[in-house]
Image (cartoon, rainbow, N blue to C red):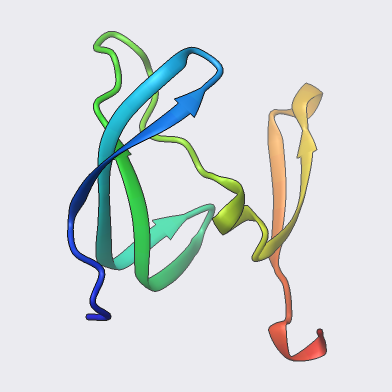
Length: 84
């Protein structure tokens, strides 16, 4: 892997300061796509919430996406990196 060690960090969020870990994972899957050798931030979410996790802009910026709230749908397509 690329030299990123697991480390503790703090992040200022809308609900206050949150502490978590930075980890590098071999394989990360979200929105029907797989990203290899990816750095993630891990937080201990409050129990009782129906949340698997949050996806940040660092990942979302690799995609074009459209939120169709009324339909309960999210359309996602990977951006062709070679065209930029």
